[in-house]
Image (cartoon, rainbow, N blue to C red; front, side, top):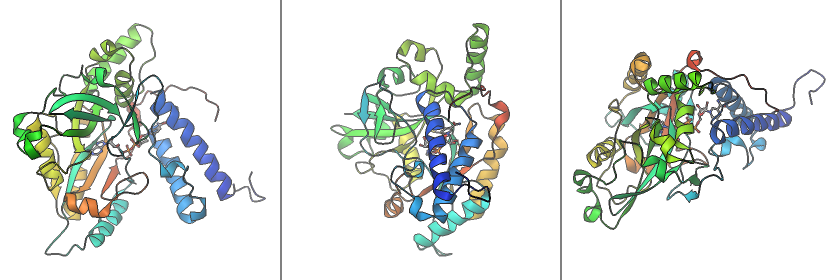
Length: 346
Ligand code: NAD
């Protein structure tokens, strides 16, 4: 495949990267058993993005860069999401984050008198889920899957102690007609606290079973169980941060939306912060990185979101990610990852 100088031609390299990414994503999302570190996966994805930016003719609808990277296992009933669940574009360092902030400020016509407000949230390293409430009662839970279709994990999510079985009246007061008659799909992350992860792996070790690679994979493996009794013993928790369709809600910003989720009785991460300058966003990222080890859950970055829901709507989405949000990725912390060295055919 290499030319006479030993370099792989762009088209062949793009095909090779797509093959690697698809193989690794299958191991990670479908089998909850990663074959490479997240840093290695992200490096390959960044290489493909750069290659496609330099050679736009290589972008095809089935490229890994054009889709949400999950899978739907046949073990679970498929669930079609009320609205697509997206992945997120990454900023791998502060200059990339600044580039996104400038582009977004410009697109929204920011001025020194009217800066764009951003809500910064911790990026929880868990598993994305959608929880559906009908007439204010919990009726269904699904994994993100491929973004359009997820896996029905209702019975498993029912075993998670902090998921409310009904929306609380304080939240319902902000839904048209008090919430009755509405179907509301909220979204967030299921995660495994670090102390539970340590205990689970100690138990696996004592029983001679393979340990999980990290808390994210332990959470995914624990939620995607055929027997909900297994899930019930895994000590999972949630943080909610989004809704599929906010139109019945009396909220105008992401910050108000997080308050609404709290009022409904959901667990909402307490570290969100509204920022109106790049300096404040940087400070939030630095604080988050500094407190990373003190938290009892893994975070792999900061999610910066345009605060106004009207501006979010104006910016819209690409094929795989919202244009109104970016994930600022922390430098890899592989020392905690116990990746098993499994040989795979790629
Ligand atoms: P992502 O991690 O880039 O970000 C999007 C996701 O972040 C959302 O879908 C949501 O579930 C989550 N999230 C957490 N906190 C959030 C918040 N406050 N607000 C909004 N969303 C929040 O997207 P992804 O497609 O889920 O996964 C890519 C990640 O998975 C990368 O870190 C990659 O390294 C890893 N991965 C690793 C392998 C491997 O083999 N090691 C394979 C595939 C993917």
